[in-house]
Image (spheres, rainbow, N blue to C red):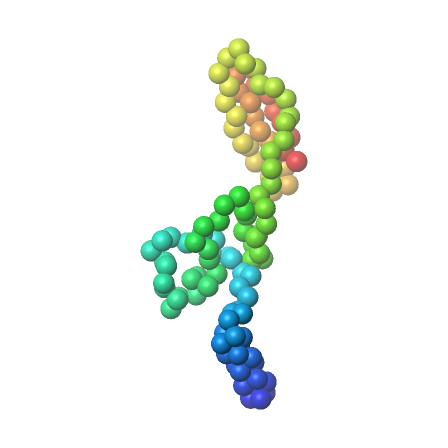
Length: 109
C-alpha cells in the first residue's frame, strides 16, 4: 500500500514539474468571491471558479451549458403582463401569465 501511495505522489509531483498540472473537474463550490483568491488553504478554493458565465454546476460536480429559452406564445400586448414561475411539485412546474382581468398557465417542460 505504501508503494502505491509513493508512486502516486511521484506521478503527481512529476506532472506538476512538467507543467501539465492536475485536472480539476469538480466545481461544487460554484462561483467564488474575489475575497477567496489565493486562499489555497481551504477546500472550496479547489472546487470553485472565479467566473462562471452561461453555465450551470450540476450536483455531481461537473458543469454544463445553461439551457436555452424557446418561444411559447405571444403575450397580450394591450396591457402590462407579469410572468410568475410556479412550482407545483418536484416534477411539475408552470409559468403563470397575469394580465388585466386574465391569467394563462403554461406547463414548463
